[in-house]
Image 1 (cartoon, rainbow, N blue to C red):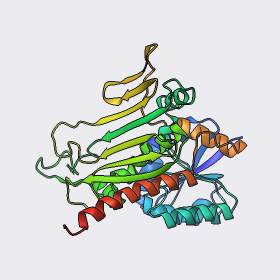
Image 2: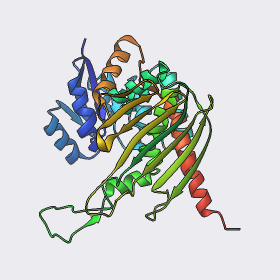
Image 3: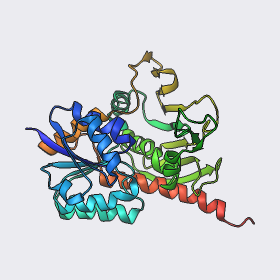
Length: 344
């Protein structure tokens, strides 16, 4: 049986991640897309050969789709989910789930009242590297995991860009993509939720305490370089570091992405910059098959199975995602409050 998918939000992540992945999964068919911007909608429809395109929400939901994926900006998620619940469509929603915890709870309640599943698109879980780390931890390959260090420092597309690459060479403007992500909460709320989710998922142990630290390289409301320290119920500790200002004004771009898990009997190290993935124990040092950290196709295969057979697999539930997002937002708010507090 082919499952007909509708997509809401024709932005960058839909273009490079979600739409190609949906089209790569045999059980799924992308039949309808929605966006309030007619020009962007037409461009996406033509580029990906989608049959139906809508700027009207009700017409989109009534176009024969079986389920919907939300790739709209985070502030639109609450309204999108309410519409999906009203039209009785299961949802896979891009992270972060919501702008506030109360919004997230209202989204979960709306879908529960309609007896529909709500999943959140933590595509990092489906990378072969992340799945291998999960297997190694579950198998006890490095003993009890006591410390995790998860890092993603990058420039978030840079501070400036040229809107017309063929125009005046001195015409640079502030990049709206970076500004938009900072307005939605900054790097920990955006990218950092992936790392927080991985730490909880890998260990199978919830966070019982957390504290945020941060720095401002640019003058946003939220910090653009953030750390969160988290204690798990099983006694392990995770440090997540995320930056949107790592070389953001440099000519030559650079990023730093790493997973490091330290256990009583060894360690696992993954460094994207060097294509490096390795297990080290007292018995062996073994190079592991390297893969990129994102995997949209695997996520959509799991979504197809969940829709067909009701098995969640490794899909992130909305309840799990809400807990992750709450930690990211609270840690960010802690940092902002510390900055605004009067000095002693």
